[in-house]
Length: 137
Image (cartoon, rainbow, N blue to C red; front, side):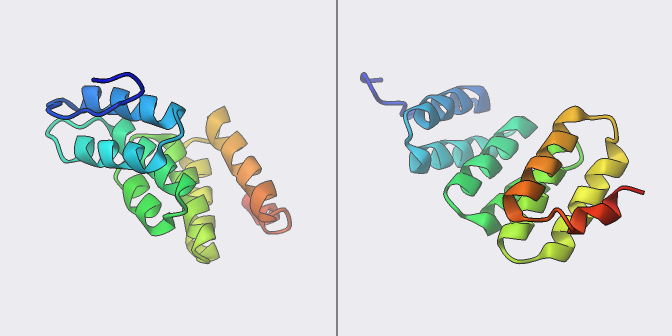
C-alpha cells in the first residue's frame, strides 16, 4: 500500500477492509470509505459494525436511502442503529418512520445514554423539539 492510500486490494477479511475504510474516512475520502465498507459487507462473517459504519458514511454522503438500508441490517444488535435510521428517515421526509424508530430505540434501550443523546441531538438538529414531547410518557 502506497503512502496516503488506503486501498485494500486483495483484502479478504472484513476487519482489514474496515481498517482501510477507517483510514480513508480520516483522510476525508468518503467515496472510497463507502466502497471499502460495501466490500466488507459482502464478505462472510461481516461484523455489524461494518453496516453501522456504512450507514454513517452514507449519511455523510447524503445517500439517505442507502443509509436506511445499511442501518436496517444492524437495528437488532446495535442500539444506535435505530436512532441513526430514524434520522435517515427524517432526512428523506418520512417523519412517521423516524418517530417510530426513535420510540422503538427508547423502548428497547431506555437507559442507553448513547441512544438518548443521539435522539436529543437529532431532535435539535432537525427541529423536532415540539414533536418529541409525545415520546416522554
